Length: 130
Image (cartoon, rainbow, N blue to C red; front, side, top):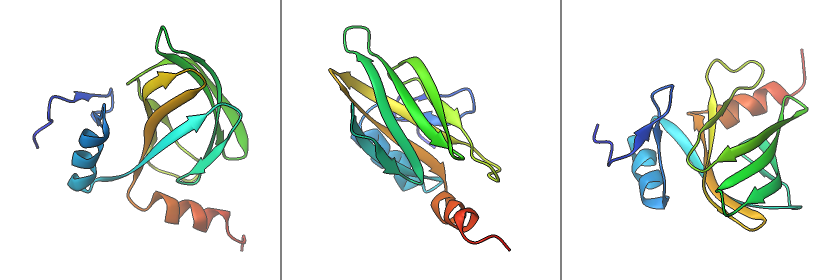
């Protein structure tokens, strides 16, 4: 697989730095990719994950984000662009990955990468318990 000059994370996943690279990774079909624009004071829900942007530092390309995982808010502080944030949810055997590619004043742009079928699996886990 040609990596288009992309770098790899510590788990071996390719890290996309722009929309073209995200499209190339999506064509590989190994994972699902969801692009987002996250604005401060405007939480979003994407791929069964909720996110809130807490702080940005455009000059140093840093940000702080809160993720809602298994009904608990988890803060990821002072992260930099193109630095993957790995996390998993209860019952999941693989990880999800959040990558921010650009930081502006009070807004970040990036994507979430999930294992194939992650949203269907998460929906089943949220359903009625037997």
